[in-house]
Each structure stands twice: as structure tokens, then as C-alpha cells.
Picture 1 (cartoon, rainbow, N blue to C red):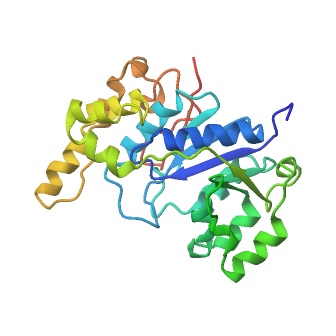
Picture 2: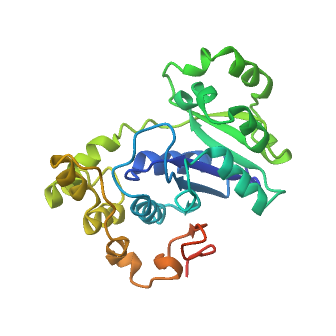
Length: 278
């Protein structure tokens, strides 16, 4: 495609921590669909999984540092500043309120899409965004055996024309094959809990800034120590992450110079608008 299409793409997740599986997926879809931007949105309280090990603030900070390595990727903090479970419907409603005329596209793995009927107000999602279903080439796709209520939407909304994403605000489904990234966050967390030696083991799996940020904050080593004492994870000091060289010039809310971030925090936190490269 010779031009960028006017669509804002969103990729949500726990990002505990952010790694190249997340980032390369977002970058591959951005290229495949000629998107101007993909925003990565760390969940404050993920509704469909156990509580993340690192705090929401740490996960956002590592996501921002990871996005700095990829042109057109940016971190968005709106879910970590919102009370209650991080429901996608609410995030999409927030984005629509900010730019009502801008089409939204939700990036989602084929496995997750197959389980969409378990999401909160799942059918409303089709009125708020398009779906970009990410699949592994050659692998059996779970979208071939969808629940009947979801199969109806799949058959009605599926398109092979990416330009349809910008012609309407929401409601279409596009399939995009991406290169498999066999990276497990569980293994990365276990390695990062063991200090410098562990970081060396996983240095090819996540951005250096994110790995160093995790080390500076002690997010995973603290959780390991606490789990040994049968306690839950505790948030460490966010300021420690910004000791990374990218963060020598803190801006609003301590976000680093040179990193594109979108902070939408609750009223009891400092508020920041977009921080762009400078």
C-alpha cells in the first residue's frame, strides 16, 4: 500500500514485562496494514488473568522504553490510571470520546478472538472498533471453530480489503499473518528475578531499556523474594526505572525524553498529555 491509512491501532496486554514478541507483532501489523501508529496499552487490572507480578506503573514504564526502539509504536497509560478492571470496551469508549471521527482497530491474537464471547460486553466491541486478527502462518487457526454467536459476526464482518478500516469507524475484521515469536513472559520474569546473570540469558528477548528498567526497579526480584515469604507482589519505586539513560530528561509525570507516550491518569494522579520525541 502506497499510503498510510487513517486508523488508530490498539494492542492491549499485561506486558509483564514487554518483550519482542509484543513489539514485533505490533510493528509487523503496522507495516502490513500501512498504519500510522500502534498504541500499546498495559492493563491496570487485567480481567481475564491472574494479577501481574510487576506493578502497573512499572509495566507501563517498561512498555514506554520498549516502544522507543520501534518507529510508530507508543505506550498509552489510560488503563493503569483507571479504577476497576481494565475492560477493553471502556478503553475504546475513551478513545472515541477524544477523537470521534477516527476509526479504531483492535489487534488481537486468533486464540483470544476465539474466546471473545467471554469478554465484558463483547458485542459492543464491534460498534467501537475494527478487529485485526493476528495469525501464525501454517498453524491451525482457532477461528475456524468459533462459538455460533461469534461465527455470525465473523462471516458478516470479515474482509480482505484493509482500506475498509478507514472508510468506516468500526465493525470489520481483517486477518493478518505475522512471523511467530516463541517468547514466554514467564521465562523472562524468572530470569530477571536472578539479577545480571538472568538479564544476560534473556537479553535477546526484550529491549535493553526494559530489561535495565526492570533491574533498576527490582520489580521481579522483589516479587521473587516476597513469594518465597508467601506474600503477593509489591510495587517498587517508579523513579528507579527512569535511571535508564533514555530517561535523563524527565518530562511530565517523569516520562522520558525521546519516548512517545500517552498518559491518561485518574484525578488523584498527575495528568500528562502526549509526550512526543524532543
